[in-house]
Amino acid sequence: MTARSSEVKVYVRTRPTACFAQELIEYLPDEQTVNVRHRRDSRKGVMNNQMSSWSFRLDGVLHNMSQEDVYQSVAHSVVLGALEGYNGTIMCFGQTGAGKTYTMTGATESYKQRGIIPRALQEVFHEVEQRVDHTFSVLLSFLEIYNETLVDLLASIKTGRAVQSGALTVVEEPGGGVSVKGLSLHPVHNEEEALNLLFEGEMNRIIGEHALNKNSSRSHCIFTIHIESRSRTLSGASYVTSKLNLVDLAGSERLSKTGSEGQVQREAMYINRSLSFLEQAIIALADRRREHVPFRQSKLTHALKDSLGGNCNTVLVANIYGEAAQIEETLSTLRFAARMKCVRTEPSINEHVDPALQVRRLHKEIQLLKQELSIHDTLANRAGAAYESLSETQVAEVQSQVQRYLAGTLDEITIVSVRQIQEVFTQFKKAVHEQEQKVKEQLSQKYSLVEKTENIMSSPVKGEEPVGAVGEVEVGFGLGLAVPSQRHTRPQSPNKSKGRKSKESSRMLHEPQVQQRALL
Image 1 (cartoon, rainbow, N blue to C red):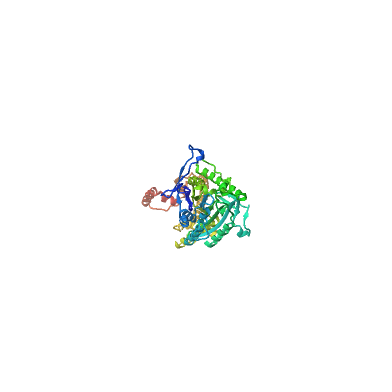
Image 2 (cartoon, rainbow, N blue to C red; image 1 turned 90 degrees about the horizontal axis):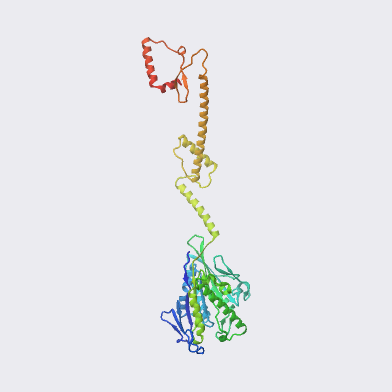
């Protein structure tokens, strides 16, 4: 299917707070535009070149919106597209403590506060139950990127260990996408099994505490739903696959505000560096004059290669802190969101063909066509029709029919297959060749007879006069007449003899053909 180009959809969501900076952040009534004002730094003097206001136009503003409304606005269409065969990616970006994990996973205290991932799992299995004309297989994977190391959060289910690290690598696929080699895939059959895997992976995530967030994510996490769909009604060997990546990025943070030290500080440095590389990749993708995009600068950008600029429906949720003290981080997040909106992707259905099933289907189709031809020939009273090579008995039957047709005892030759037509022409060719040989033999015999006759005629008997020829036949030689002394005559009367002679002369003049036959 032909890919259709589309822009990345970008939404901004504000964390609820009692100290919302209304004088600095303004949401326009169109629910798509955000205006930000920033106070001038008086320490730089009265005259300076600092901008004091910015305007960002995005696809939607999610301000004071419930988890259900956020899911319907952001993820509903992407999840349905994944069931049709389109890859999808939903990611949350923003500073630490802005509500990314809450948007993606939700709170465990209340069912209504579920995030995008639990709601997406619920909708996937609801659609699987409704679409009875297709068979679906759903598999899950949970990847963590911690300090530039890939970790399988669901490895403990198979290995019995808490976390398996260091054995995963990002590899390029032939179609231009990427996959993580060594990442475990877990089949699930209902929503309950899927949620259990989600909670298992969440328990294995690495979190830390600092001044802005008591449960700060210290790693990037990618929860992927792999879907394969096959039609029950169509007998074709084609099927569709898709990946739905639900990405919870770690938050950017300033060490001066978080007060991080030791291991937490080291984690923050890795997080900020990977997010910086992510922003560089987005800038390169937004600039259409750039040919090279630095996806391999970090594990995060490499793992998200096909989600950012490839065959994927991509949605970004920019989470911001709506307080005056965090206005610089808010501006940074909105700038990233504006750049992301300039990125274009080319989503298309991932349709595949099963080679083994295709071969079996073609063999079965050939057998069905042969059976159909056989049934058709039977109904048309064409007994003995075949579509394989003719046997010796069938060849002999065709030869007999051709000979009878040439002899005139058979009016027509019944044709029942293409191979019989070829054999009929072969027998006709043989018959023509045999007839040519017979004609040549007859002509050679006649030429020999002519030469022998001419030799006899050219050597007369001693004492006899040469015999004159009175006629020639079609074969090219003449017959002589007996001399009068040797002719057998019967005595007749003078009158009758004269009349009979004139009569015979007239008959011989007007009937030469009869004369020739008589002479023969």
